[in-house]
Length: 199
Length: 272
Image 1 (cartoon, rainbow over the protein chains, first blue to last red):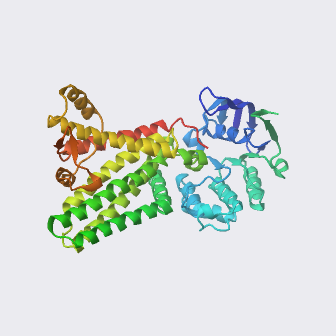
Image 2: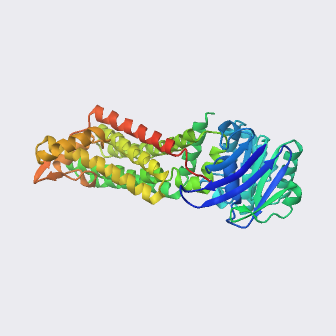
Image 3: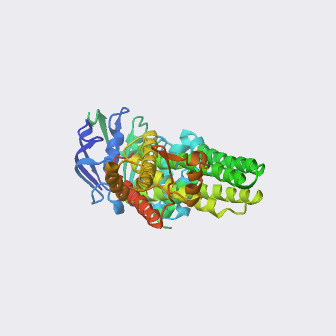
């Protein structure tokens, strides 16, 4: 699923490395949690795996280089914090992800139900943070992807169920959290980062 | 549905619900109505000039605000905040994603101008000036100018913050406008011949601001208000001629080139 050696992330040419020397091996049906304080490079590793932040190192994700568009269709991504554009409703966001992924708007509606989003018709800027995290998880779980990449998943029963269900069907789960709670036990393996490197 | 359509539609939908956008849309329409009310109390050419100059002011000032703001938000904040990352990780390549975001913004700008042009036509008819075709053509000309501002701001937004992107785009438009004015002055022989060659080269290469027949005529009489102050160089009044079809097409081509450049330059940008 993922084989990465010496991941490096640098956000500016000639700038300091945000991540260096991180190795990841993730097989089908397995999980991996990246822990560390804020700013330790957890999210940067996930972005490198997805090809969002031009990574260095030897990285293969589902047999392709990071960011390969057809491969991204097999990956479910839940970004951290509040990753939306103003003015949209929660349902519209999830439907967009479903439609762009080729699953149809109905798949988005199902994901919203499964993640128990409380106010799917509300504007995203008015959502409680708990609902924001649920909407992000709904985006990630659309269409049963082969790899789930979750940045700061909050531990709701629905989140736990989605992770367990994905691993049971053979999908891999890569998550990052600074407050892991019960995620280490659920995912089975973990890496701790300090200042962008394994600590 | 085509992914470009999906992204364009959702971008346009989100923008159209934002307060600043609705505020500018309504304010522009209100100024056009106020101009019509003022024109209703005047007669003949004065009434026509009032209606047209107020509307032209909305197209220029309101158009600049809307287009610069739309373009300046095309990439930067949404790339850093995670929204574009959500679009890209669905497997749609970055170039179509960026193009779709720009197309969605252009569609929104077209909708704003359509609304203002309809209000202007209704107001013109209400005060007995008919639909005013010249004002309609001026609206189309300004729409093209504002698309140029929007795509320029979009290109800047790949590397710069929203405020800087908007300011650079407006300055670029003003430069294109100045070039057209200087070329008109050069053609009338009111500027030194040593500058003529440079102005001609720049005029041939750069995009050109579009001057409508209505604005050209009103500017010549000094009746266009803030939309086109009378151009005076070396104490000579310069008449800026209406843009030719070649100029219209040339600037449209430039808009397309800048939009594609924005999409291509987005390929290697780090996003969240």
